[in-house]
Image (tube, rainbow over all chains, first blue to last red; front, side, top):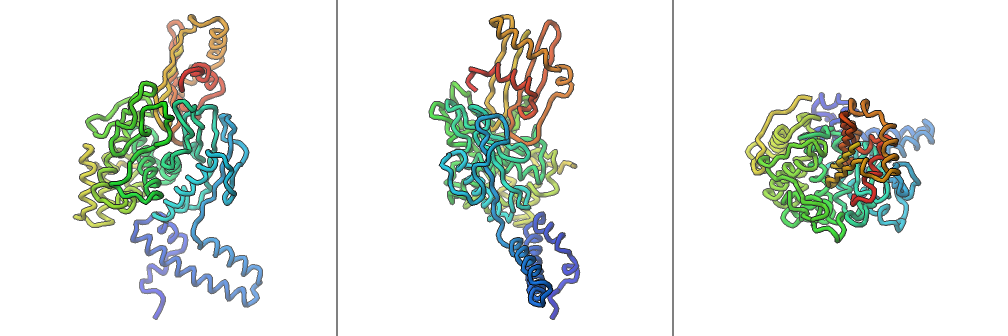
Length: 367
Length: 98
């Protein structure tokens, strides 16, 4: 009996298999990973033979070590830099991968938050870091003076300390760290343009996975999770629970100093504005709430079905940089059909979720 | 000269707005802002507006500068601020709850 039942599968080179393992749907990925691991076994045996045959013991062992490193579970590679309250991303490295706690809250929270987010993507989706290829995770803490923000600059995650009157340390909420890291994942996948509806989708993806990272760490089911983003961001001076709520957009805060949460939860209340890159942090409330509706309808752990569908939709070729709510909704339905079957409970839940926020299904937007 | 700056965006998207008429400022502050604004190439900035940086969750500034009947408007991410614009928004937001 040969080791190959389907000759076409035998012809697929490892680079293509790696690509499928990274980009394919779950069934394709499973096939690719199985094939690769079989292939690894054969290569390991060859290398062992080469090493024993005096092909050069050293080369043989080096190759084996490389192979071992390549086939072990992906691990985070974190570096935290202290900007020392200057508006620069260049600074002293204060904690590298494997270093002990520093005692500085921002540094240790960023380090731990990166770890939790890395584990989430690896454990649930087999993703090795932001780019799926082990990109080192770089964080900058103590950015600027009294800086009330955290952002993704295209290469790293940057956190201010907050002014201590309105904002506390921006690293304090795991979902905020998950939110920023997910901006990197989105940039690597659909690269949703950061303006208007595609920008609001980009923001929503970050909120959805930021919340899921927290739910996963706390082992919360959809009905038990609070669905808040940035619970610890406000100081006690501010009358608010968090920055945003996926469960009830528009209700996260209402305070004389900072104003009122202005997120809509339905297309009827979509906000047209030129501020905030065309309302990316405002209208994200609509897809945020759609996700919440899908996840709570399906029940259990939100990352298992709703999260899987959203993740695959983000990677789907149908989600282009110029996607809008309708086109993304259609892709989530397509993905759910592919994963669970056309007349499945999951497809019904996804349709109902989008229907609940007034988004009708659309066609995919060309790249 | 009228300077009006609105900051939106950032992770929290809180809106902050500062509006000043330099004629109503003490001479020292008025002169400082005037020199600063004169050092900016507002025509070029307006032409390139909106200036958006890579990444996400940057603050976005909407800067309006009106002098006589000339008006210039620049929309720009904080990652794209030149030193001069950085100094301008810092001066204006200084002392304001951020």
